[in-house]
Image (cartoon, rainbow, N blue to C red):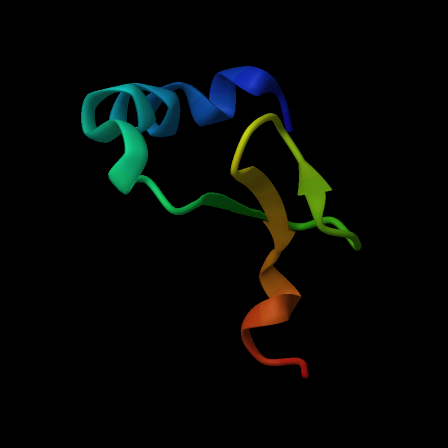
Length: 50
């Protein structure tokens, strides 16, 4: 997971400005990782775990 994985979300964030709530990239890791302002890497397993 690198900052490049968020390139499209950063463009969207700039385009919609204050209407942007959060951006999420799913990955095969174990923890939620913040990648800047309102951007997160979230484990795929989070889709089916509580």
